[in-house]
Image 1 (cartoon, one colour):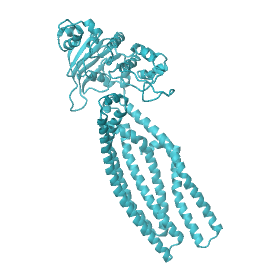
Image 2: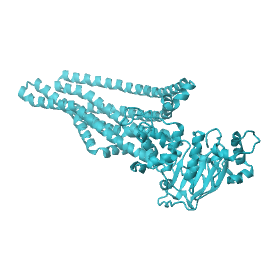
Image 3: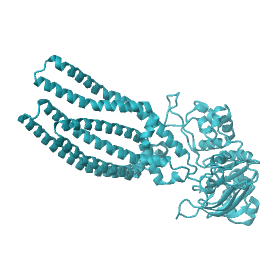
Image 4: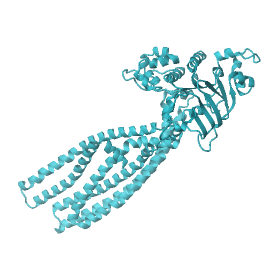
Length: 612
C-alpha cells in the first residue's frame, strides 16, 4: 500500500519499533489472564507462597509493560506523524509545482480534490499505520483469547469468533459512506472557508464595512456550515443505529457466555480459574473483534481518502511536454501566431478566433482593444500557460509545444496588471523574479531603482528587509510588517521583471494600472528606455502609452481587425482612431478641437473596467 509505504520510507526504524511495541502490548493481556488463572487455581488447590511467587512476579512484570506501552507508543506515533507529514507535503507540492499551465487551478473539481489531498495526504499514512498496528493488536488479542476459549470449550470459541463477521462487514460499509460524505462535503467546506476568509481578511474589510455586507457574508458562511453539518448528522445517525445494534447483540452474547460459565462451575466441570478466564476472555474477544472491525474500516476509509492524494501526485503534466525538448535559443527572428483559436472550456465562447500575428525580434508590439477582446489571453498563450485550441505559436519557427516550458519562460520577463502581493520581505518580493538575486547583493536594489520604488523602500523601517505584511510578524522583529499602496505594489511587480535583464521577450500587461498620472508618465518613460531594441509586447488601455510602438494590433471579438503603426491606424479612422480620440477628448478645451497628441502622450487617460 502506498500510504503504508510512505510511512515506512519516512521513518523505517521508528515504524518497526512502533509495531514491535504494539505486538508486545497486545500479547500482555493474554499473558496476564493466564497468569491470573494459574494463581487462582493454585490458591484454590492449596498452593503456598513459593508456588505462586513466580507467576506473581511475571504478573507484575506484564502489568508494568502494559502500563508503559501507551506512553512509548504515543511518542513513536508523534515521530511517525511528523516525518510522514513532511514527506507527503514535499511530494504533493512538488507534483503541483510540476503543472505547466493554469487550467487545473481554474477547475473546481480539481480544487476540491487538491484540498482533500492536502487534508488526507498528511493524515492517511499515519492513520493507516496506526490502523495496521491496531489490526495486529486485535489479531494478537483474538488469537490469544479465542485459543484460550478453545481450550475450555471449542464450540464457545467458534460462536464468539463468528459473531465478529457482521461487525466487520458493518464497519467496512460505514467507512465507504464516510469517504463519500467527506467528498460530498468538500465543495461546501471550501465555500465556507472562502466566506470565513472574506470576513477576516484586511483586503475585504474596507468594502464589507463600508457597505455593511458582513451580515450577508456571515449568513452565507453559516448556511454552508449548516449544509455540511446536516450531511454529517445523517452519517452520525447511521453509525449510531448500526453500532448500537451490534453492541446490544454483543452484550447478549456476553451474558449467555457468563451464564454458561457459572453453570459449568456449579456443576464442577470448570475451575474458578477457568471462570475468571472466561470472564476476561469474552469481553477481550469482543473488544478485539470490534477493534479489528474498526481498524479495518479505518484503513478502508483512509485509503479511499488517500486516493485523492495519489491521484493528484500521479496526474503528471497538464500540458504535453516533449521527452527530448528543443533548446530555446535567444530570439533572433520573430514570435509568430498562426491561425490561433482558443477557448477555456468546451462549450464556452471562443476568446481568440484565428489570430495571425508576427512580433519581430527587437520590435515593440502593442495590443489594443476593449475589455474582453482577448489581449491578456493572448499573452498567457505566449507564456504557454495554456495551449491554443487550434493553431500554432512559433519561437523562431519552432512550435512552443516542442520546447521545455521552464526554459521558454526563462527567456520571458513579464509584468501583469495584478502583480502578486507576497507577504515576504521587500528583497524577497523582488527576488521572486529571479531567485539567484538573493545571493547577489545590490541586484534587487538596482531593479527597484529601475522601477522607481527604491526611494519608497528606503523610507521603510528596515529597508529591503521590511516584511510586507500586516498578517505576520518579522522573524527578527516583534512588530508587524507594513503594507504598500497599490501603485507601490505595481512597481514591485515591475522590479521583478527588471531582474531578468537578459530576457528576450518583455511582456507588459497594464504595467501602470493603479498609478497616478505623474507616476504613470514616469513608468512609461522608464519602460520606453527598457524596451529599446528589445522584443516587447505591451497591453494598455492608455493609448497614449502605446502610440510609439513599432506595430499596434487592435483586437476585437478575438480577431485582429487593425494592424499598423499609430499614424497608419489614425489615418484609417477605425476602432483605434475612435478609442484614441475618445480618450484624448479630455485634454481638449472643446470637443471639436484637434487632438493634442503630445499632451495626451504625457498624461494618458484610461478606459474604465477590468482588462480582458
